[in-house]
Image (tube, rainbow, N blue to C red; front, side, top):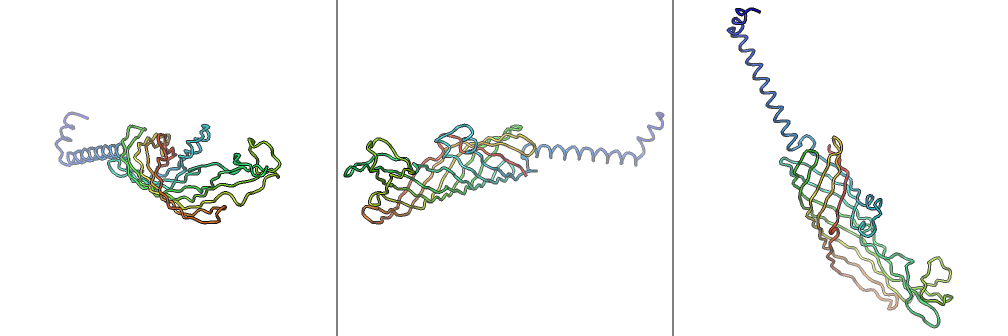
Length: 271
């Protein structure tokens, strides 16, 4: 193309308008793409729904945990991400080993009556504690690693049962030995012991720090750390076998369920 032809193209009004349109379109597309990229990077509003499954007790068992695993829970949770990385979160949790006690069969010598040894067994048969949580969180994103702070309010329920059983062993001379419930020499003493049952409801508050790490495009692993406090009220009754009497139970309990450990480890999926 000659110089004269180029001059003609430059001075042609139609060609100039077309080039201007192309320039405007390109700049607009670049600007929109940049805004979209910033929006995804900063807020991740494309996938703002998240489902997660808590696996803390399973991990605790695999690691050989003992006592502290009763403070953890299985939970199914939902989170919704808003602009500026504010998060609404709710979950339903089940504590499979909440407030464990001694089981039947763990006994100790109590007394000897007319040459007969009497052994006492303390037991609990608590139901699984369930809890509904509602809360909010502020997320701070650093590439694939996210961390945040927040608070949750929980409402929980549990059926409680505990008491003492007494059994005699007329054929055992050594009172320092415990017995097995399968021993045919065991005889129940119905005139001793008691049985208590109650329903407990509570309100829990937790302030937490959370960490999430992206392991795949939509998959995350998260951990929640932080103290919590639970205020509970229990109502029920106790039956005293010796007195043949029932008495009511009205009690309040204040405890700190997950101090100072990690309260939750979850696998998360972004929708």
